[in-house]
Amino acid sequence: MSNAVVLLSGGMDSAVTLALARERGLACHALSVAYGQRHASELAAAARVAATLGAAEHKIVDVDLRSIGGSALTADIAVPEHARVHALDEIPATYVPARNTIMLSIALGWAEVLSANDIFCGVNAVDYSGYPDCRPTFVAAFETLANLATKAGAEGHALHIHAPLIAMSKADIVREGLRLGVDFAATVSCYRADRHGRACGQCDACALRAQGFADAGVSDPTRYR
Image (tube, rainbow, N blue to C red; front, side):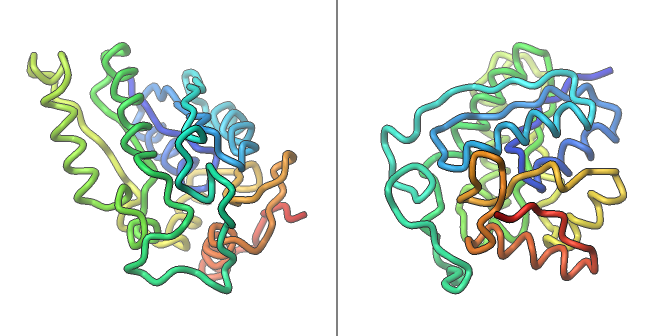
């Protein structure tokens, strides 16, 4: 069985991504990053998801992005509520500078250690409208970097960055997760989730998640406070 590294935040998108990677018959090594995010309860959710979806192992790596701030998720900046959801061409306050570049770089290093040629991340169409590091051009550019900057790539062992949700809406992701048996109640998406993982119901992430379940015609299993 071939190894793969799967970035696992604990949210609905990364859970479905892990399930899709497992469906391909890969031994999935789940990677979460504790970067100083205010919604740290997502890390406990990631551990639950990794266990229930059969990850080969789950690793949490610490990177202190709060020390540089610059985001509503890592500094004392208000998290936007869904009444003020950003325009499609506007980068929102919840964008974390260099987050996905850093996470994929850590995943790349672990992939080399594991002799894994495949790295999975859960970026999708809803995200890349606002986040520059969730766009198809970024994913393609990082794959190019991965093959130029590593021993594996230099020796001809091609590395691939997979973003299987990139063309999906939230409703598509809900439907795919249900097909794969993902327990969405175990996931945490809220940017202001409390220490028990209960959602605020007001932030952008909550609004997008709730709309996804509504559009899919599925009852929302999210725990709200």
